[in-house]
Image (tube, rainbow, N blue to C red; front, side, top):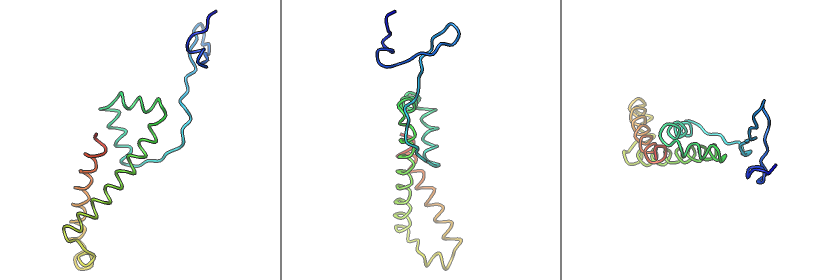
Length: 124
């Protein structure tokens, strides 16, 4: 019996009843860790960029991609929060004198910075 193209390229089959099914395995990948922003990117890809999601998944590059996006987003957030706080004059003196005002203003900055980071990195 002539070999299929799959078998000529090193693929194997396993018989289940009367049917031969190809043995498909994802490539072994390094273990990557990602957090909130990686999970947000994953959800976005799954819902809005399905072909890209499955391409990354089947090539074994999804976890690496999500980890890189998570790191990039955290870095952008840190940079934006620092720059915005400096621009708006939020200092340690304000923190010492009026802690609630400092918290309010820093939360506002974090929310704005996160919105920018999400639109620039996650939802692209």
